[in-house]
Image 1 (cartoon, rainbow, N blue to C red):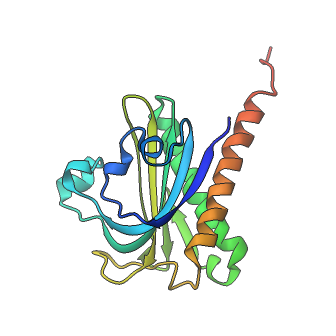
Image 2 (cartoon, rainbow, N blue to C red; image 1 turned 45 degrees about the horizontal axis):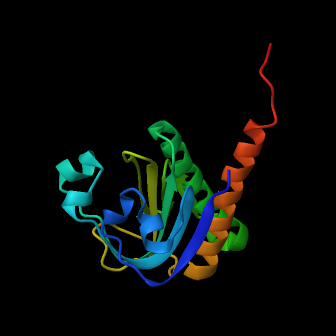
Length: 189
C-alpha cells in the first residue's frame, strides 16, 4: 500500500476542519491513503473538536506554532487508526532520538502524546469519517502561550521542516512495510 506524502509550503493554521474526509485531496490533490505535514498555528474550534472528553471538560487546544501531520486511510477501522496514531507518535519520538540523541533521551511517549520532562510536546486525535479514518498529530514548535505546560521543537533545537520530512518518510515506509508483511504470508494450518 502506497501512502502519498507531502510537506505543504507556507503556513496553514489548524482549526480542526482538516480532520474532515478528503481534506488532502481537496487541498493538494492527494487521492487515497496519504499523510500531509504543515506548519501553522493551532486553535481547534468547538464545532470541529472530535474528542468529546476534551469538549466536555472545556479544554482549549491551542498553540501559536506547531508542526502538524494529517493522515488519512481509506478504511473504516477506528482501532486500526488509533494504532496508526500511536505508531506516528512513536515515529515522531524515534526520529528525535536518532537525529538529536541529547534531547531524545529526555523525551518520552504516553500513548499518542510526547513529553519533554513534565512539559507536553504534542496533541493528537484519531477519528472516523463516512469514508475514511483520520489522524491529526501536532507537535509544538513554539511552546509559549499554550494553555498547559508545553515544550516545543525550538526548545530542543530541532528544525521543523527537516524533522517533518523525516517523519513523513518513516511513516509511509512503516505502512508500506506492514502491507508487504501482510501480503507475504499464507494462512496457518
